[in-house]
Length: 349
Image (cartoon, rainbow, N blue to C red):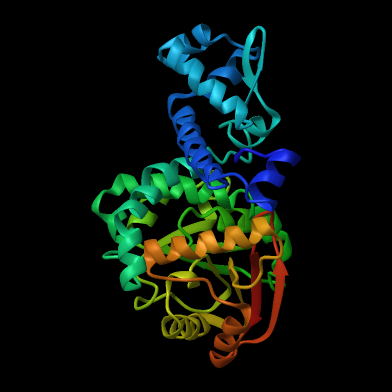
């Protein structure tokens, strides 16, 4: 987590501009790299397994590291808020226990691994190209296809961030009475479809995504919903989606496409829905940031979409107009989850 300046430091760095505030970005970059390494070598899990503070030497023996080097890493992680320290060694903070342990239901570790191993390396090679030319030389999904293991890392990361939203999203969205068929377009990790099938026992779901994502998913369907889940690999822009669905999900899909592609996609989804079927769109929305953190988060997401996909975030007004043009009505918006700028739009065919 970023270093949190005290009142005097905020005054000097931000209000009076008497010190180099950009140093905080340098510390933040180092904090992310240190966090990624701690996750990779198992520092947090080792401390959790010990159930008591560990000295640098004891911890180093558990994670195969040099005691002196590990002590320096851990001391920095203490200043970043990930570890605590006492006379008898290092321990976990409440933040780390909540968000970075594999045993936690809200484990974000795979999400940070996804950024460390895939997204930021892709940034390094494509950010300048995207800024100068308006798009990267290839999309990150095309890059994933070059090595199937990248899809596994990506799906683990997508699943981790979806775990923060899934309960709120499923509770907020509308499943029509008597609905039996759902299609999750670009559904990848399948977390939303799994939970919807759990809560609606008569519902079956088809998860439609590119071959790399579907191949990764097939071995990860939970036993309690395996009879309710089907997968279909293809290009949702051109291949047959099926028909007579009662519900369609487009979650974190439309930001990857330009307006013409999204209008055409909405028309294809409308054709795949039964009369009265519901379309649910989840994404981040332009103009939705209301606080410094949420505005920074939204601009960060927009720059990431440009760099990785040559894409952007859209306003809800734009998407409402595309939905109406595709034959949908009754568009409703609901905010969901703890992440900035995230909301669902629902519409009826």
